[in-house]
Image (cartoon, rainbow over all chains, first blue to last red; front, top):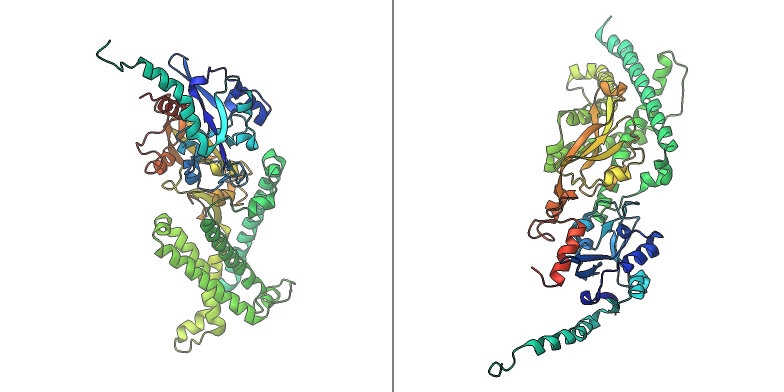
Length: 165
Length: 324
């Protein structure tokens, strides 16, 4: 079963270390604009969500590509652009609802997460465990497990016995 | 001095001379463009043979279509050159006109077959232009003129050598003059016939792939205000066809153009086509050309809105957190 990146937004503190190492591993520069993963900060920078290519099964980028240049890597399950076939029309960038594909500001080519050939750098370097690399069919279980704590906390706050107050 | 002599001697010489000068001059211009392109960084990045042979990564159907179409055009144009030059009946004419040139002719049956092939292809190109609605919409009168004028000397030549015209004595007597006259028309046309890139404005999605594929810098793409402009410098173009092969919308095409001015035109790039741009609805950054957005609307952008990658990430993150 192919593995995929699983994000826990509640664990992310927005340090952007993943961006730095992703950029370093793929482009040999520490440039967040060239990183495959981006930390999106919301609510006055309180909530942070690392956003990365979802490796969709029914991928919009793959379908939108007029040159049929996007293909799935059989071993890692990552969607990959064949640089030979790519004509640079950027339809994939436009079609992706997650902003998972972007254009390299220096080279001008399109790029997205390639799961680092099965050993993702962002998972390795995240100090808070906000990104994990798990089998796709286990993702639901991991989400449930991480949700249990919030669920319990929510239950405690609930007025379970309205009569007693 | 009679009409036949006028057509067959001074007029033929004049037309041939003009055509030779024009072809020579254009060969020099093309050579200069080629040398300039090779000296530039761009062409060295990709070998020329690969530029010419690459299918540009379009869908297999389009590649097949473009390859077969290209092959037919090559055969047609080769026939246009081979038949008049290597036809056995033409070669002694050079000696007759006072030139001491002689070369081995191709066997007559070959030339006959090639003539038939050229005529069939001309008929096919003409009919296709008339019958295929899309092609007809993009065609103009010069396109039909070019095909007709090119086919005529082959028709008259074939009738002259094989036709039985005893039923029409007038035509029979004038056939040779008619053949020479049509050939002169074709040669005169060839002197002022140019091959030029056109971009169909209704098909162009503004994706700028052609600008990336152009090895000589003849196609330049620039965003000006709310429109994307594609500019073309004909004197830089080597007609390699990279843009035609790479165009995902089949909007770029090599087209004939009859023009006198083009012989001496080295002006700045002229705009070929312009496309409206779409800007991000949240941050106002450039997203993509409008036609590309329109292409994606039914399937991938159901609400018709399109955001820049950064704002898409933001909106997806907001959904992930369960925010409205």
